[in-house]
Length: 407
Image (cartoon, rainbow, N blue to C red; front, side, top):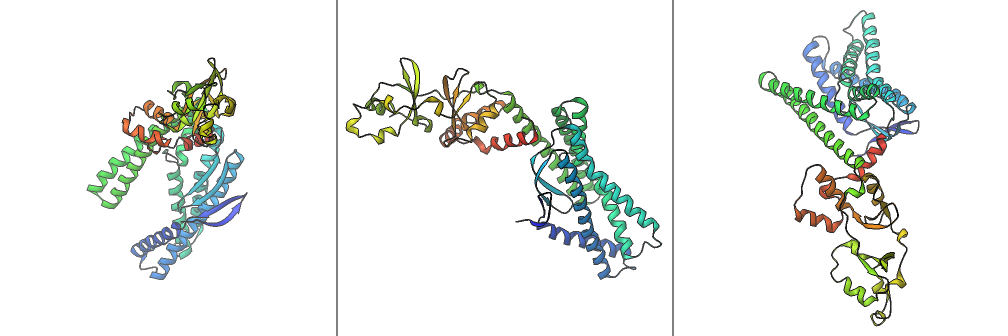
């Protein structure tokens, strides 16, 4: 569903997702029920619904205000934000570039919790100065204060992508000088806390309240799965950064002498199996002399094949999209997406061709590094399509690594 833009600041669209209106109604209904149960003798049904709606609406307003200030700090720390979409109790930021310093991330992470604490403090102070807490306005103010206090503590929980998680990761990064140490520690913390939440949820489910226990159990499972995914993602990142193109087994080049005629070329290509075989590399007395495409056979009459030589159609090797064997694997992934067919010529430091590299070879190398050995029939299936196996999105991972400043 398409999000609705509510305003635009610093060139960044601030949007509200349509689901927010459904949650707004449910949250208003939940608060109105609380008001009826606790203060049914003071407020009638209409007043209870008014309290529920205005509490929910002003809660979103404070969240939006906090996000504006958070965005201001983020921009000052070098973050490039594309859009911001609100989902009632929080916002999802579409970021093109993240902050590249530990101190900058600490500043960004602490903004929202501090603003929530400050808002709660002001609202509690207003409530303290009021002569009566039974008015509709004071009821709303008290609820907003409590909810902001709740959001402040919620955001400080050191789990995953919450501000508390980012803060913990950035503090470790700042004092250790290693971004990866911060990520690893946060991931372990997320796993431990999520496991405790899951166990507590199971106990609560059977001993106290079924629905609350079920919710806690789901949150625990979500945190555990998130931790496992982050751990796997971190492993893939290390493989892409630390592995070289030369570590892979790339496909040998098909080669033929430049003085061969097209009849010999045709016979040579009869056993062609893969799409990469459309390119044939030429040698002249053992030296690389360029390359041709098999389509030249269609451009020349069969009657002239015997008198036409492949060397007459050669193209220089430097015209072929290539990658050096000593390059990091992530560079090969980045380059391969800029090709039409999805494969690269691997060359050594002297520019001499070594073989052909495609998505298939890269994907299986990554899986093997992760300890996953796929069956040969599955390998053959993806090999013919020249795709990354099992839908592994290595291109997106590389883009995320660049956005985070990891490469």
